[in-house]
Length: 105
Image (cartoon, rainbow, N blue to C red; front, side, top):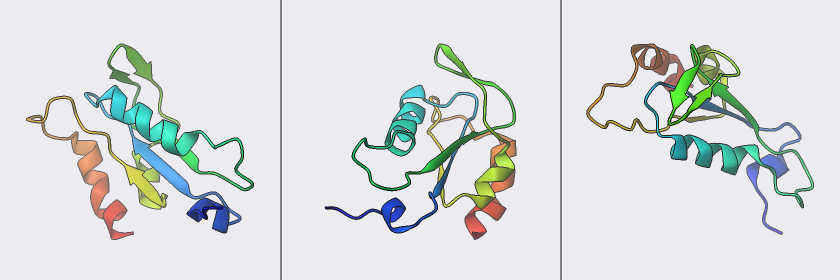
């Protein structure tokens, strides 16, 4: 049996996915599918996944309500920031402002 980080720890690892306007819905869905859906045969805890943002965001044709604020990024074991659809666009200022505390951890 392959051992994974979640199956070694009795507490699920936390994953924070940053939800921002203009992000690619495929990347958000992929991250959530990998970390948010526990395999049926897994004998232990899986990941605790939270979608983090400051407001509801439009992702393609969908509107997404974040579970918590961007401040949660600084406390997560893993942080995922889906790419923006427009690569020439600057990332949102509120996301950039959280990065010093997040990356220091």
